[in-house]
Image (tube, rainbow, N blue to C red):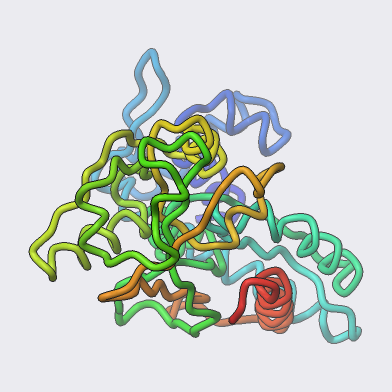
Length: 305
């Protein structure tokens, strides 16, 4: 097997198309097809099923995809470590961020990365925790910032911050904001129309789990996957949101809302830095991880009590 063959196969498998993979790699499609076919002949296995809509992976293809990603990752690590002999940190780092933090941290993190690591490349991805955990395991992400990730033997984790979720009301909310007390019991959420992200959003799962513990169930009026969209609907009086307080900083007019602490019990969400336990961390990865922790800490500082 040649490295170019493995790289061609992995890119086709990930993009589901020879045309897209050829464009991404910057090579002619016939050459790309030849690389993949040579790999299949050498392995005596069909790796891809070709159809009019693109390609799908065979069982053998799924196995090789996992190994292929690992091989490419190891090559990238070797190249970076050889480059670091000269004293300059280089290589590519991919980071996953939750939607609630992406708007607050993308610009400062990118600026700091370019300043501190000018010879390295940064890739930022926004997504939900479940999908980012899969990307960490598959090698598509080097690290991710996740809410409440479940313990796993193949993942390492470090606590960044604990967030307290609060009830957010708009001036036009069904029950006027002035009628809500500054602190409300968690059980009160069962009587309020909530606008929440769909499962498996970490905040949604936390709300449901904690309410189930006190024999209650949230009243979900609308499912919206987009925090700014949720706040727009809350502003218009279509329901309430249960989110960290800092999410209002993403909104142009936070004065249009009132916030109410939730108690008995409080809703505490853990923000974790997560990375694969099966892949080595390069010097560039380690520097980027510390940088990400510092940027997030600074971004959340005004909301810390």
